[in-house]
Amino acid sequence: MPLIQPLGRLTLAFLEIIGRLSIFASAAISHCFRPPFYPRLILKQMIEVGYYSLPVVGLTAIFTGMVLALQSYTGFARFSAESAIPNVVIVSITRELGPVLAGLMVAGRVGAAMAAEIGTMRVTEQIDALYTLATNPFKYLIAPRVIAGVLTLPILVLVADTIGVFGGYLVAVHKLGFNPATYLKNTLDFMQAIDVISGLVKAAAFGFIITLMGCYHGFNSKGGAQGVGSATTNAVVSASILILTFNYLITELFFSR
Image (cartoon, rainbow, N blue to C red; front, side, top):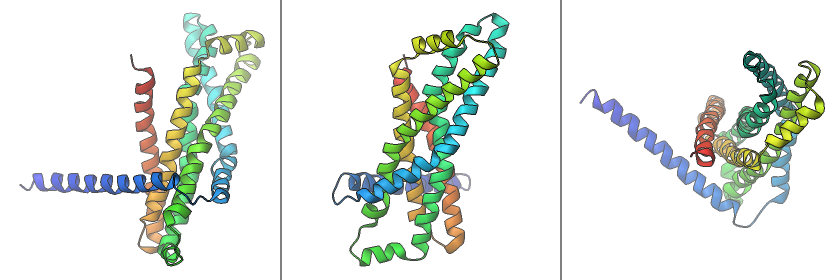
């Protein structure tokens, strides 16, 4: 029994967390489709999630594409397969690196900000004040952020894909000596719609995960400033783990044979 009890307590605690998160997610999703809506808040959150995340996502994407082209060249040169570099860059960026890296960057920036903001409102009793004003916190705080994340992340990933492929083009043409027209032709010939669509589906899922975890941990924070700090950390860590987990699941869904 002394060996089984800790395992049982851990299992029950894990199931309790899953249950609370499922109830929170179902409530958040239901409020996204029921009026009243707050379009100004949704637009504000879309600017916060998308526009202000463009610099960090763009820098991450362009250097990822550049490094990918450079590393692919050093490997493929051993087999005289340098012509496959455009194919590797376009597939890697659109399927995996674009959505995953953009999701992780946004999780670190936006997920932490959401958890800190809502957590501060929780510990300073501003959320309780919303109840007294007959305003549903899920409708006013959670739903606009979730909607903004789901709508904005695919656009952000589409921009990241373009910038990442352009980074690979810069290195291939100006450093590795590729013909620009041939590189672009190989890129366009090898690109398939399913690659881009799978990346955009991942982006929408990641946007939901990032905003949900940021709102969940902030909404349930307690214990003053220390609790807000813990909620911020937990939001980023849990969102990052779930992004990597769902990245595999969605890839399995699209490309399993």
